[in-house]
Length: 253
Image (tube, rainbow, N blue to C red; front, side, top):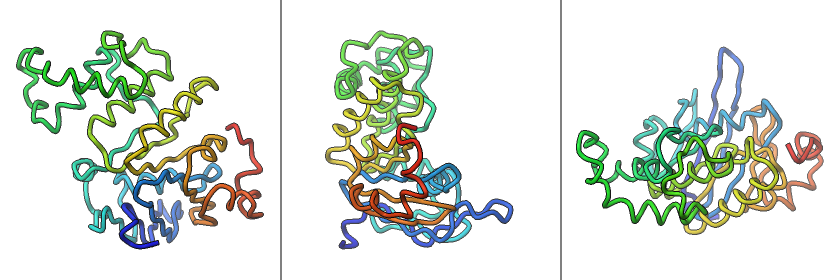
């Protein structure tokens, strides 16, 4: 694989907490335009690695690169401006605002309107068309006036993804997007992720192996803070060390 194919890269990433190595010497490269999943049993280090790549934590050692430029010491807001945006396990919408207002807030930042909250709401109407396009892209067309906090959980997840897309990310990072969803919502959000990932790079942490198998171009398997395998699902699922570490567990959880 050419280095030009790699949009997000970690080299020798290590993170220790009081002498415990949650991540230990991990190398990872996320290919441009791919859906790349991080999996592993509880305590494997996948959330810590995800937080290193998204700049929630600073590594104890190692380097992180985005499009070839080092971002190891960059702040989360700085990498968001560079086009790398993450979601979180818990839906982060503004509960008392409408669906349309939530997406409009996300759209304000790149326009500079984020600093004009004292002005009348009418000044934000220029964002309505784009907000509605984003809502339609995640299956929320016609839900403009619904109160975000009253949405079913699966639709809240779709709204969160719409607000993330409002920042026009090159790299979309999803932290357990299926957490808390029922079977029907999982199918809907899986289809949504596949659709919105076209034309961009997606990195996700996910426990649901059926979802991982369906979506992923590449899977990195972690155990005890180290990479034990990487490749397509059909390849890694046959490895004894992977089956022992992870795939032998409940594949629905």
